Length: 198
Image (cartoon, rainbow, N blue to C red; front, side, top):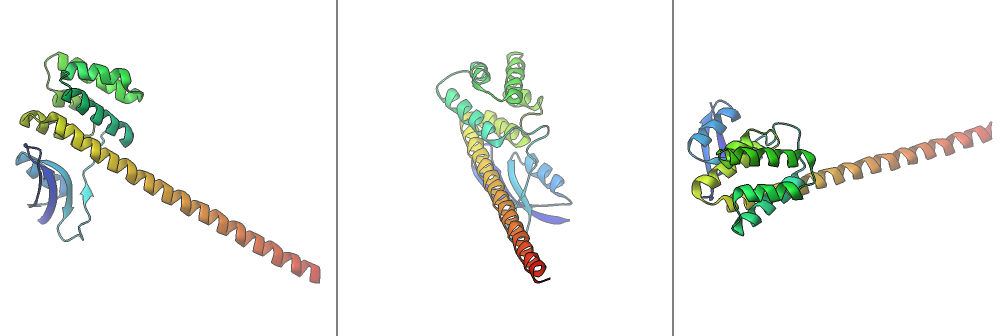
């Protein structure tokens, strides 16, 4: 049995921190959800605060930047007093990502049939589980717009982090290529001098 520290969001949309004992991260996640909380990150206690992020995507990943735009626009439309069904229709028309567009259309169809927004989103593997949980918490607390705004911020952070990692990789690869060229040039010059002395 290990102790896991976690960050989560309660039904009122507020951040909470705590710890739970469990055999695995999956069991810890289940116990946290049983408390009515939406886990955002979980890590083994004493692991130098290095969080273990909960897998967010079940199917083919939709870029975090696209998900951020989706959540922020969804929140803005709802704040303007537009119904969830009409908001989804507007988002489907505006979204360029094909997979996300199809997911929004399918979600709208299920909501029109009487399903809740979170249950409708759960039927499509395009939406990350953490987004679905946050939407469910927002529906329960009457703060759906706030939940979507929080997720938009989270996706923006994810997109920036991926951008930094990619830039770092590009710089590393570029440095390697420059060093490789320098080594080749040095070897060529040295070989030429040896050849001239023969």
